[in-house]
Image (cartoon, rainbow, N blue to C red):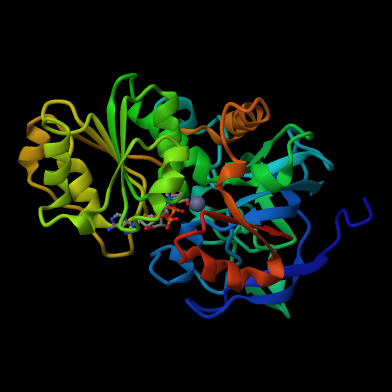
Length: 377
Ligand code: NAD
Ligand code: AHE
Ligand code: ZN
């Protein structure tokens, strides 16, 4: 390849400061070092977590940085020792790595991986603890080990999933975060059984994917809870069978759900990032066995609370990252499921814009009608 081993100058959206509009800059992207992969990003979507970090509320947020973690592209070049992907491969960058060697990967108990997390949490690459991005000589931090709001990015080889080259990248980019998170929260973390009653708090992409996962798991009742009543019509298409708007009730929402379900739901999922709702999601679970899964990401300084008696009496509180999916092994499997029409993806895409329109895309996220906006790079 002509660009192999050379610095590439391309367009990227740089977050110079929290909450200040992103700026499309000419960014220099250094060649990949040992164990690294440079990827030409073709499509990237926006997830609420990008907005969270951009807001300045993420304790791991560093500026200036290049955000973005839900994308698809093609390998441009690889560094020394990279064997599992090569230039031309179609890939999805994965913020949750999978090295298959660390104690997390070998535990069989978690999808979290320890190999590069210390570096990705501080916006640099493992090798030299430096960034591969710069603008006019100023280093720009990486984000979540992915930084997909750029025409080119550099990721660790353990953070890239090789996928079916026939898969449409403008669609399967969504399999980098929100859709797998919701499906996996149901299938891997909660392990919802057929016949269960499920409550989903928050009907954005993640909550709708929870509903879809619960439907395929055979849940008999899927109760969607959102403060925006317009969400119900769409939510039905993803499997939600009943809708509750907390604003329509004087009682605490957990009491409303307990009353609706003869003592509480079997499983609940918080897909908002609101610690009061996390409490309600736990407390609407059935005594003795109800399990609540925290999916939403809450701001720095926020803490969850409940009466310990809630747990003493058999409710279980869990959390999930990327739905418990092992990224490099299972993202290709999810792509295959999409290709076989066994999971939805297209239905979550409500808007398409270009990377240059990224600030408009962030504005759209705050509008109720937007699920995922896909940007072409
Ligand atoms: P989103 O903003 O599209 O959806 C949130 C929904 O919650 C909206 O429909 C909104 O109307 C509703 N809502 C807001 N406040 C509410 C309240 N008090 N009660 C009921 N409904 C309320 O977000 P998303 O992209 O679907 O992401 C959801 C959350 O999941 C975010 O916090 C995101 O950061 C997090 N997330 C976590 C993971 C993970 O691995 N754990 C992965 C992806 C996203
Ligand atoms: N940096 C944040 C934590 C953010 C967080 O929890 N991220 C999720 C993925 S959200 C994707 O949209 C996650 O996978 N966490 C596990 C991990 O290893 O980061 C904070 O609040 O500190
Ligand atoms: Zn995300």
